[in-house]
Figure 1 (tube, rainbow, N blue to C red):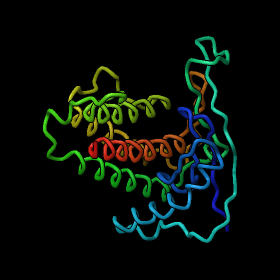
Figure 2: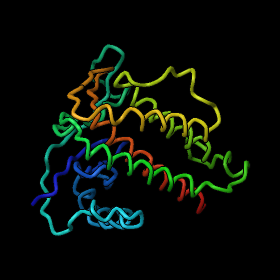
Figure 3: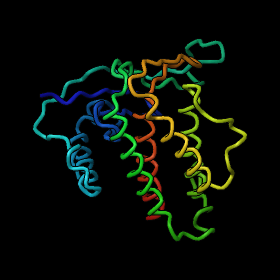
Amino acid sequence: MSLRIGIENGSEGRTVVWVLEHPGCFSYGDNSQEALNTLPAALKEYNEWLVRYEQEAGRIPLDQDLHIDSTWEVFHIDENFAVTSEGYEVNAWFQDDWKPLAEKEIALGIELLRMSRTDLLSIVEGLGEETMNLKLPGERWSIAGILKHVASADWWYLDRLGMAFPGDQLPSEPGERLNMVRTHMVDILPSLAGSKLVVGIEGEFWSPRKLLRRAVWHERDHTSHIRKLLKL
């Protein structure tokens, strides 16, 4: 058997290696080779994460060969959809993203989202207001800002498929925003089983599989981000 991966070059100036059949499993590098070199450690960490939440059935066999399913070069477009050096960053659309999600995949995806949310909330539990709102030099957001960003990104993924509630209903308080958007996403996901929905919007393609891929990745990525901030 082979482990199918997608390579996304140039995402926020780096390469992301996506393990396509395992949402939330990814590695980074300054280029594709470096990202591939860091993948074994990411696979090990992912398996440990699953075991911690008693999801051993989803563990990835580490003796598989790697199969590069597709490679995407990130580019930017302007308001007229012309390619430009700056502007809106068009992220990866892999061949795999066309595939409908099966009920089993959605059930696992919902469990992964539960796990990632548990991790996120556990590291901010008990933090005081000063720590939550402290913005360190060179950082785009405070910890509270990161939480709001995670929730807003979930809402935006749903909006790409025309499935988000009105944006003016988003609560301003980070915890409320996280809970409201995630509850909506989890309610929506089961209805997408078998859906062949693909939406082209603002220069990108979106599908239920891409939504799930990015939602689990994004929360795990920012959970690690907050851990690093707390060490500082």
